[in-house]
Amino acid sequence: MKPWQLDLNADDGPPGNGERATVEDIRVLREQFVDFMLGYKFAIDEITTKINILREDFNNTHEYNPIEHVGSRLKSPESVLEKVQRKNYAMNLAAIRENVLDIAGVRVVCSFISDIGTIRDMLAGQEDITVLEERDYITHRKPNGYQSLHLIVSIPVFRSDRTQRVPVEIQIRTIAMDFWASLEHKIYYKYRGEVPPNLRSDLAQAAEVATQLDEKMEALHRQIDRTAQPRTHPAETLDLSVLYHAFTAGAPHR
Ligand code: 0O2
Image (tube, rainbow, N blue to C red; front, top):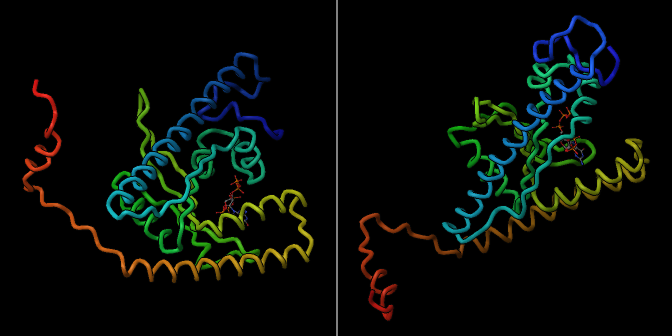
């Protein structure tokens, strides 16, 4: 089969016996592919909402925000099919669903190293999230210096006519790790993967400096944290009439 050609005989494709695809076949394939990709877009929306809820709730409860920013990306159809071709998977939706687990990607950038574990545990502990894979490039830094925690999770997406479990790759890292990774990404693409040795060694050194900065900031953060007052949770039976009187004091009677 030629590159970029979807398998018309596969279960997910329109009927075909190996004959040339008609305009109608291509239209049906495109419709199915758009619908397939939409599930991943919805999964990004679900995970992003979960992270934003955690961010706001954590901020409210602990008066501290562990999340600096959240980004997401949906792989383009071209890039999905290019990966299928490169990895030699079958050119059909079932094979893509099973093998390409990073179509939906969400990146969480945290302030401190310890926040990474906190966010990881808060997400992994949610009932509807299943962790399928975990790669810890922080404990085991990549040889080029790349650091990040990668989780492949699956979550249910409730469509109008069905419920699907959809995989999402979540990358969790600190600001310093993210800064390093985005520069390395630019350099890697500029040199089309053939990064000159002097730049490679500079990048490795920069990764080391980023780690030292993260460790120093973590130590400083711990010192401040020790002096922070823990917030007490009010009892459910707390009498709210004081609040009521405060709200209504001076309000015109109706
Ligand atoms: P983008 O731009 O995020 O779409 P595979 O996806 O199968 O080829 P693998 O080894 O299964 O790769 O996955 P891995 O190592 O968990 O990495 C997947 C993603 O992590 C990459 O996605 C990058 O986003 C990021 N990543 C991994 N290694 C590096 C690295 O050395 N430098 C930088 N800057 N990022 C890295 P994509 O699809 O390659 O890119």
